[in-house]
Length: 376
Image 1 (cartoon, rainbow, N blue to C red):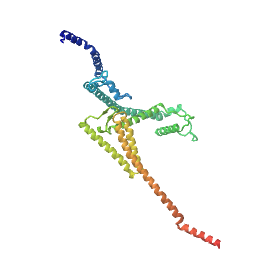
Image 2: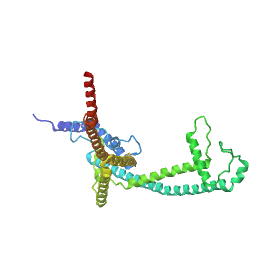
Image 3: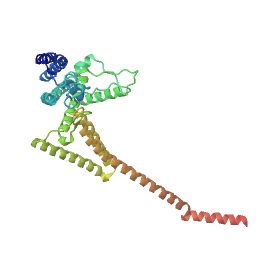
Image 4: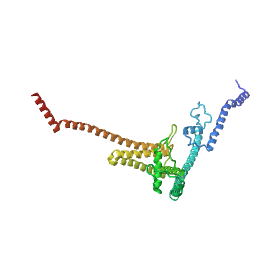
């Protein structure tokens, strides 16, 4: 049986003509996936940086929203391909680009934080100077009102007589000012709700407010100074998340210096707590001093609240707190043993005083003689 080559050619041509039709959906899907892929790439090319100031920021969610999904068609041929999925090489390029943007953002934020810290420190000295200038002007005004213009003011203001002391000569000068200020403070403290309280002048109230601001600012500067004197070793810092675990980069010469300084500071703090516990014979006074020092360090860790160093510093402070708690339990155990030993000794001493003393035996003998006389 012979086949007609012309018909075979027609069948082959028709098959070739009809072959693109079943593949057209796959081609369109491939085109659509590649068309959607540049959307993620275009997002990465633009400034896509995380908002670290958002309290609800989640690193895993940010990465899932920013990066394209990974295609698994090569591993699972029958699996459905997710829309917008890209191969591993392209996803790696996207990750590198995103990490570069985040690193640049961290550099900018660190620079901004350094500038703000410098401005706070600089403005602290300027504000302290302004407070001192205002304090000097206020003292000068007070001296002018109480010394230079005292007689002129007395002509217009009647001085009330004292309770039961008559109208004596009024005092003037700094002593009178101090007495008046102390009397006013005592009156403000001891005044009852129904009684009238003499209000201080406005400039005195403003001066007190500025003094409070100055003290608060000095506390802030002191806290920042203490924080700068407490470096943390890079080995103690670890970034962890529910989906991501990132280890710190390889440290260079500066990193080794920072590691040594941090370890030395941690050893000094441990030695300081140990010395405080051993002071005053290792009693409760040393325990109280060490406990106060640990509480001060615990309050200082609030400077790093929300940062990557917060957990590491809190963990170190908790270890110091455990040392102090162990000493407290040891002291309480010693006190309990001393009380238990003191109890039997006091009972034995009381029993000996009742029976073994010479006075007790004499009275018992007299009692026995009296009973014998009555029996006879």
